[in-house]
Length: 432
Image (cartoon, rainbow, N blue to C red; front, side, top):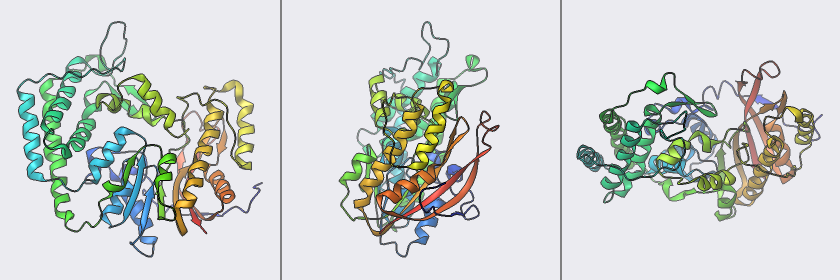
């Protein structure tokens, strides 16, 4: 029994068909530079912008991810602040949002990279990840030596070629990131990396790495830069100016009070996925983290949606639903595959409560927040993320306008016997 007047969940599955999945974006111009599988599509943001009475508004996405909200807002002349904690994903966002590229200059930079590689350049990077390449006593490693050195030679060539053209460094690093897994011994598999079949016999030639990178630049990135050049004359907003790297809970404080008309975002789902882990190869190979202390610091500042950090003691936010669910989960204490599960769940909602509290003063009266979330399940106990956020939002004084049912998500094979599917929704809040 809910202790508040719960909002009826309305069915928007037809309207949001494929909109809340980033799969629709992966072949689109700019997005294809480094396809993001998590998060929502361009169409989702476009549909919300169409609901507004004006384009003379200021938007915010505190969990920028691949930069979809900022990019779509920019294309529609809407100013958008955006925050992203991951230095690699921040690089992806910056690359996508720039609109001052020149196709002529880009070709010159790519040709210089090609010449530098052909000259036989050797990189001098030291990558501290223990399993990055073959070493004594290692049973598995992420790259065979030829691939590892070739990819880092490309990175070195990018640094040299962009010394006098720094605006192209991000876009070229992102292009390099897009081929890292192709030449590695692993595939991205859900929450983790999985070794490819027959990876020990994988043969990689240096020339193949170089040719693949140059081809990606000229066949995928260059046509998109030409498209950006054509669109630039119509752009009235450059959202690169309003993009910031860091913890959204801290960065929210930098916003001016009553300055935001609309928030469009999707926080990390409470599925114990560590997005630092998901992009570990990119973080290390591109130099965003240099040692394990850097990885730990990054993890500590992310949303508490994973168990890679021992979060310690916890305090539950004011939510009867969450308390009920936690009591049920604690009955399975002996079966926990990680002792941090309760503190992760509690911490996740504490982090969201902290962010919503700070956003309350930044959003204008009448301003709306569109928050795309999904429920989760542990030991057969469903954590109703949308209902818990609804309760927390009510406590903070937001009006809960709608909870829109977007789609059903199948659970993992381990859970299907207890919970067959989970609800993904869009919560619409309003500051009164």
